[in-house]
Amino acid sequence: MDDSVQLVLDTMIKGKWKTPAANLIGFKLVEYGEGKAIFKMKVDERHHNPMGSVHGGILCDITDAAMGIAMITTLNKNENFTTINLQINYLRGIKEAELIAEGVVIKRGTNIGYVECNLKDSNDELIAVAQSTCMVIRDKK
Image 1 (tube, rainbow, N blue to C red):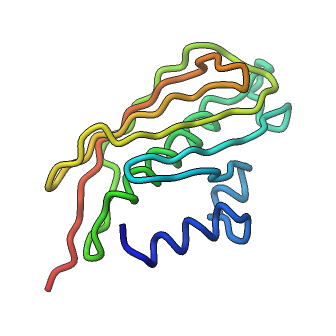
Image 2 (cartoon, one colour):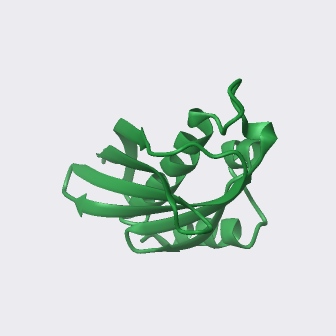
């Protein structure tokens, strides 16, 4: 992992900087390592859909963040990435909970990465599972 990326991730964990999306929605990076990232978030009625449960887009956002940071930890200095596919399966609805999203890179190839995320509550109940396919982009020299 590039030292500048590690510095940014360490700053995020210390709570000294959040991405605009993280600031808006309320998720926080709490741990990362090579090919993995964990985010946490407390959800309540502010995150509800019209049916009174947490909106699926909110759940997708935290899984996308966890998978994205997990992928970032595998990149070399001259590399970036973009998501080319994201899928999420919602397994149960929730109203209020502390969410834990653990993104893990399953396969990092030369050009493509495959990442998965389990989204659980603080009781270790599975809320959703997500998968992402990422394309590695290299700087042109």
